[in-house]
Length: 263
Length: 327
Image (cartoon, rainbow over all chains, first blue to last red; front, side):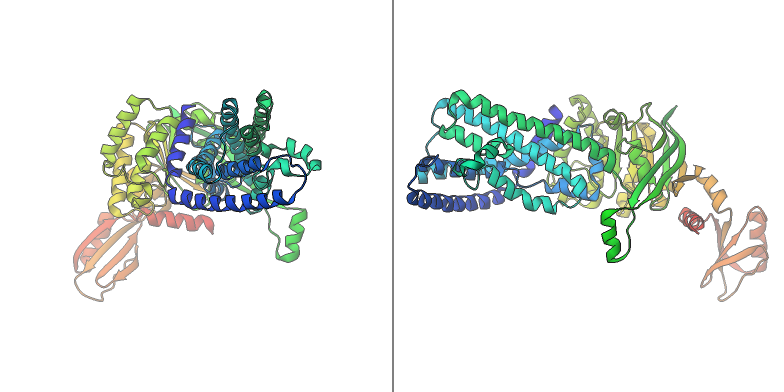
């Protein structure tokens, strides 16, 4: 375990070097946050019906989504992609480590660093500009943090699975084009999931990506009452486990079949 | 005691066959034909503890494939391999703990971090205890003169400096076996000699068993007492450098500097292979005429300022060998 935490630590210190990227990302996310909130306001002003979210809740959803955008598994580790493409991935096997967890902790670092660097200033900003309310209760605040941690694990397991899939597709182009759209939409980042039409809700409630932004946000604004929190965090962990097992199974097959190199 | 033993190792790859043209491309979408390429064809050899063996062969001969199988990252199609008593691909994690691998063409260091941070990561990955780490880092820093390089991000190091750091990185866990894949490629003369000296010392003093893959014949000549030559998946020769010489190039060279210009040497048992101004290179077979007799004959017939005898360079022997087997 110590080896994997060392991998995580080393990756963190590499990624922390990209401060200007974080700053630029922060500016872009603030900008998009404003636009989304304005659209929502216009939408709420026009709609006569009662909506499943109040405007204040919906605005909170938007800013939480903006703050934790980087937790969404919308991209992959370029270095690993290159390694698989060139076959250099074989050399990763020279380490006395389990390759799956080696990659998984790289993914955790990749999700954690940009999210940490951007979320705090964004929280401060949205807090000041929009009077972003704090979580509805202390229990909600603690559950939110717990659920967010589960979201990081889930997202990292999805990222790792996507990386492993590159053994079969060689070029990751196709999957990398699709990934942002699917993940942004289904995690509730583009439009809060409760605002989707009713007939879509059964599907939206079961798919794994809601575990990343939607569930933590619902806990934060109190749509999920504290007595149901365990069920939702259990949901996140169940999907996490699924992606880990699927990833490990595929990686095992990939190594047996595909480590074909000349020389 | 053999630390590495390889017995009729067999590895084949199947590569999809490309069909020509547009329609061929479409046909390939539906059914693919595969070509089987034999990478290793019943290769057998043994390496004893403390040996320093040169593993050479033309590009595509199967050298890297062998090294990958020995380090457990590739599964062969047949044959027996034992590395320190274990079958590497069945016990990958235990095997890689005991070996170090250096690839001249790539680095195992983290590009954006100073080498020392990569070292500390490797310490955790290999579960190296504090005392062993301290001891091995100190001795490597001293032997490879790393003290001023450790804090610099790897991307800012020169190739020679990076290679020294890479060598240190693969030895931190004090492996018993070291695979070196072209460790001197692209290095300047000073760095090459430094790397060679270090490899020699490592083998002599720490008794590390070393398998060296290279195209640089100076590496082989200055380091290896034994060479394994691989060609098209088969072991072509396993023996000392002098065995190789006898087999491939039994002749001697006599290099003569004449006093007068434009003179030509002719001798029934020697052939002129090159002439450059007053210098002439003669080649003769020492089993037909002794070196001494050859010199006597040449010096009695011509007026000579200087002369010396040499063996054909290893480089040339190997080149000749590659040509022979590929024709």
